Structure formats: structure tokens, C-alpha cells
Amino acid sequence: MPLRVACMIIKKRLEYSNLFFSGGFFMKKQCMVLFGISLIVLGVSVGGCSRNTNTQVSGSAAGGGAVSTKANTANAVFGSEPNTIDPALNSAVDGAIYLQHAFEGLYKYQDSGTNAAPGINYAQAVPGMAANAPAKTVNDDGTVTLVYTLRNGLKWSDGSAFGAEDIVYTWQRLVDPATAADYSYMIDMVVNANEIMAGEKDKSTLGVRAVNATTLEVELTYDCPFFDEIMCFPAIFPVKKSVIESAGDQWTFSPSTYISNGPYRLKEWVHNSYILFEKNPNYYAPVSGPEFLRFALMDDENAQLAGFRSGELDFIENVPTDEVPTLLASGDLDVTDYLGTYYVSFNTQKAPFDNALVRKAFTLSIDRNFIVNQITRTGQKPASGFVPSGMTDTVAGSDFRETGGDYYSVADTDYQRNVAEAKRLLAQAGYPDGRGFPVVEYLYNTNDGHRAIGEALQNMWHTALGVNVTLNNQDWAVFLDTRKEGEYSIARDGWIGDYNDPINFLDMYLSGGGNNNSQYVSKEYDDLIARAKGTAVQADRMKYLHQAEDILVGRDMAVGPIYFYTRSYMLSPRVKGMYYTPLGFFYFTTARLEN
Image (cartoon, rainbow, N blue to C red; front, side):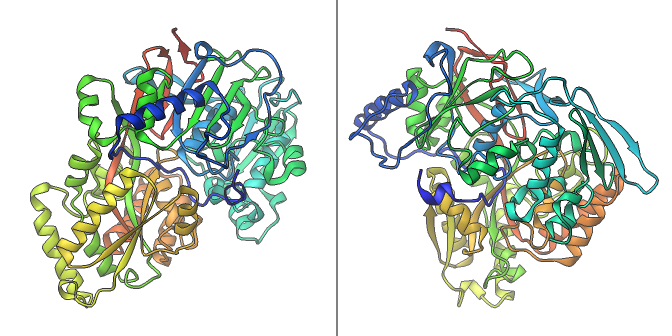
């Protein structure tokens, strides 16, 4: 594995990194790709023929037993080489899907039996390692005590005993500043978490303790309405202290040290080729899914489609854009809902985007209808705000986006009116018709879909505003680091909900926040988020969150929303029984293969 990848701490949370696009692709290349896919799926090692000189095998199979074959293996693609599969450090959707199969929290996602899309049901949160829902006590000071009873006989994948102390260690590691986990704030409602993250208290003071091996006590600063969903999230998944202390940051690279507690365990990782999971024989319940899960590591949409059509791949998400209309019409490509927003981040601390007028001008001049109708073409909706449609507001069934309204019109007929306003704002900022505006760069991660959108934005900004924007693409890991460090002017960005509450789209823009890619700073905004986190009264929470979005987008335009995501996929008819959450996780845990 390249050193820069092995050592990298992920800087960005769950983010959709791939998008449909097509480019020139000839028959000869299709044959080569199909041959390559066969090698990936069958696990064949090719020496001098490999184009990737960095491919290495991490460990060997974790013991004897069954051998992976097409008949007993589900073959899927969710992305290329992951930056990390450490639960605390992962920040990408593909990595999270791997983690959802190998680990489990106090709660887990389970098939709800309600259909989401062809071949796939929705997921629901249910107790996982916890035997049942926690006993809850609301204390006089407003804090809340949760007491969880763990299932009896829990074990790690290596057969060693699992206990409540393992959860205590995991949570303390997550909030420890030394871990540098951008997702540390996921449990900021736990007593003393914020003080620990700020370096003001020791991690041992975190409001979680093991009463005994099977009893866990958690102290919350308020009655958090979405805590069950947080307990399903990968950053919270337990990790084994002895392994991490002995193997350090190399613990994720070998089956012998990648000890997990979920329904599957790591069997083999051939870097830049595939990750192979097998059923965990020490899981507390029988695993009804395939014997093996093989995740091919690919980013070429043409190669993925060729592999799917040949039958070597059972599940893919990304196909060439030119193929989308045909695949949708034939019913081969399915689309389901997805709680996420695709947008651009402006570096608010770097001229000329330290000026809100400039940011507003660039945002208003984006033709969102062109992008969703001519480029993405899988049902995405033009974004009129940052928090996407589908996020619950005050009561069940209400929608935060509908309640909050639009910050600008996304009607196709209003685009020229938006452009006129954008030109006025840019002139007010001192750049009439773009005169005197410096050449700026748009940064995106290497992907044909992102390139197509980048080229469209480049043209829109030049045509509407008279400004010149150059394009720069970087490999995924490098891109994450560059954007995170603020070494850009405008950058592609995307955000997928971690749970169904609008705060997880808004609290990342707290001043100094680990996922605040725009380097945005606003005390007024910070205070509103603090108020929202300080009350359990849903009407008050939503009032503060709407006011916060009014500042972030309506007043300061720290980001430029483009569209609300959908999730498209192709699923082999031989795979039955998958389930999915609109947070982006697909599950093979209960899938069956009909060969």
C-alpha cells in the first residue's frame, strides 16, 4: 500500500465520491477490462501484466474452510482503494459499507421488510450488541442516563471475549484529540465529550462506564432524539484495544490484526484490487448472507458495467453517463432515495471568496437544471438549500427543506433572473462584468462525472460572470487532504446524512470543526448550533437550526448547493434479500444467492 495512503488520516466524513460519466471507450479496451475484472473477481494474481505496481496482498486467508467461488460469493463495487477501514478514521461511504458488514454497534440496521426499490428493502435501527433498548432516566439537571445491557456471550472475531470495557475504550479513543478523528463530535452529547475534544479534560472523564462486563452506563447532556441512529454509525463501532496498542496504525491491514465483532470478518485484502470478507464464526447469531463478500476496488465506470454485464459483478453503482438513459429505460438501472447534497465549497478565508457577495454571485450563476438533466440524469433534484429534502422537521412526516423554503429559485425559467442578480452582486463586490477578478481554480477528485460537472461550472461562471476558472483534479486521498487543509479556492464537495436529523448537515460548519471544509467562522452561527444541541424540545431545536441555515446559506453562502442526491445501482437478479438505508449503506448481511 502506498505510504501516503497507509499513513493518511481521513479528513472528510461520509461522502459520495463517484458519479456517472462516460468517455471514449473502444472495443479493444472493453475486452482488456473484462479480462481484468475476471482476474479481480477470481482472485488471480498476475505478475508483470499488472498496470498497478503498488498492488500488495495484506495477510493471507484467516484460516482454512470454504473457498470463495462465484456460487458462494457476492461480488460488488462501491469504490476504489479505501483510504482507511478504521471505524474512527473512515469518512467515505464505501469504507462505511465495508465497516457495516465487519462491525456492529449497540444498535444496528436490519431489514424492515418495507420495499425501497427493486430488489432492496429499507433498513431500520434495532438493538445490536445491546440485548434491548436502554433503560433511560431523565435527571433533575436535564442530563440523561442510559443503561445498556449487552447480549450474553459476545465475542470478537478472533474468539476472545467482548465486554462493556471495549465500548468504553472505543468511545474514549474517538474523542481523544490524539486520534484526530473528524467524527469525534458524533458523540458530543455524551457528558464531557466537548471538553475532552478541546483538550480541557482527560478522556477518562467521558460519560461512559462499564458497570460490569455486560452493563454499560452512558451519561448524556440532553435527551438526544437520534441517539439510537448514532449507535449504528461506523465511527462508534468498537475496536479492540490490545490489537491497536500492539499494531498501531497498521492494525487494519492484515486479517490477523483486523479484529472485528460484526457478521463478517476480513479474510484478504489485495490492495487496489479487492477486499474479501468471510462469515464471522464468532458472531452471536447465525449469518444468513453469502459465505463471502468480495468488494472489487475500482473507479472506472466502463469497467464496472462490463463486469456486471459479464456476470462477474453482482452489484455496481456507477455507470457511464451515456448509458444512463438506455439502462433506465430497460429497467437495468434502478434509483432510490438518498439523504445527501452535492455542492461546492468556497474557501471563506481566502480572497476573493472571503467576500460573501462573490460567493453568492458564483452560487446564483449555477444552472442546476442543466447539470441534473444533462449530466447526472438519474433523478437528482436541483438544490435550493443545503439541508436536503427528506430530513425530518418538528414532527414525523414534516420536511425540514419544505419548512425552510428556498434560498433562491431553482426553476428553469428563473435562471436568467438569477444570473442578472449574480452579475449585480459581483459588480457590488468590485468586479463589474468580471473585470479585475483573478483567475481561480476549481478542485475536484479524479472522476469523469466530477470532471463533467467541473467543466459545466467553468463554462457557466465564465458565461454569466465573465470570470476565468481553471480545473484541477487530484486522486481521492490527495484531494481529501488538500481540501481539508484549505489549500484551494473552490472545491467539489458532498455530504450524506449520518442520521435523519438536519443537525448533522449543519453542525459540521462550527468554527474550527473537523469537517468544516469552507473554513467558515461565525460566532452567531456557533451559538445557534449550541442552542439546538442544548435542548430536547423538538420545536425549539428546529427553530434554531432553521436560523442557522439562514446564516450559513441565506446570509453568508459558505457553500454553493447544486443538487440533492439520488442513489442509482444495478443488481444482479441472482441476489435476493438486500436492504438499504437512505444514509447510503447497502447490506448483504441477509442476502441470498440464487445460482
